[in-house]
Image (cartoon, rainbow, N blue to C red; front, side):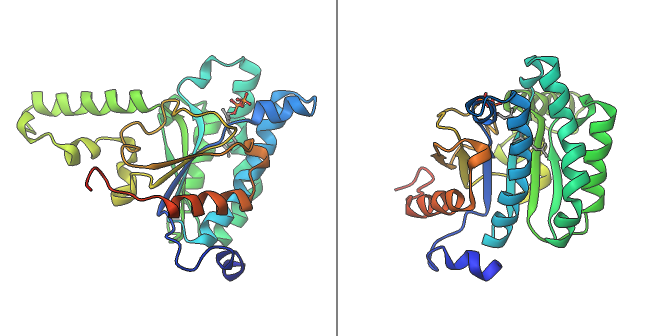
Length: 247
Ligand code: FPP
C-alpha cells in the first residue's frame, strides 16, 4: 500500500512534514442527506482513519487535526456531548489499526477541562502509542490559538516574576517552548494547512504556528475528503514557492 500510494505522487514532489487540517463541513454534509448534524461528525470521524493512514503512507511526519475548538462549547449541548464521545468511539474502534500503522497519538489542547471519560480515553491512546515511531497523529482537542498564546504569555510572566528568566531573553524560541505544540519539537509549525468545505479562514487554529504555512482551501466537505483530495492538495503544496520572508 505504501508504494502504491506514493506512486500516485510525482516522485520529485516534496512532502510536507507537518500537515494540519481544519476538518470542516460535517454539518453541511449531513444536511444534504437530510440527516442530523451528528451523523456528519460520525462520518467525519471514520474519515480520520482513512486520511491518517494515507498521510502516514505518503511520508507525512505529523498530521494535526482540529477536532474540537475552545469555541465549540457554544454549540447545542447534544452536539457537544456527541463530539466529546467521538474519541471514545474512535480509539475504541481504530486503536488496533493505529498500532499496526506505528502511529503515535498526541493531543494538543486544554485537556484538563474535558469530561473525565473523554480525557481518560484520549490520555490512554497517548500512553498506548507512546513508543510508536511512525507518524504523529496530533488531535487538537479543546484547542484555541488565542488561549494557547495567552497561556504561554502567563507562563513567561510568572517565570519573569520569580526571576527564573530575564524578560530580555524572551524570543521566538523561548515563546514557542511555552506553547502546547512544544511537544512536537522542531515539527511544531505546519508546512501545509488544509481547510475543507470551501471556507477560507483560520478559526483560531495554530495562530502562532501557521506564520509561514502554505494554505490550501479545498471545496470538499470533510466526510467526502478522499485520499485523492489529499494527494491533490500535497501536489498543490509542491507547486508553491516557499520563501519564508526572504527572496
Ligand atoms: C466542523 O464541521 C467540524 C467539527 C467541529 C468537528 C470535527 C470532528 C471530526 C471530524 C471528528 C473528530 C474525530 C475524533 C476522533 C475526535 P461543522 O460541524 O462546523 O460543519 P458545518 O460548517 O458544515 O456546519
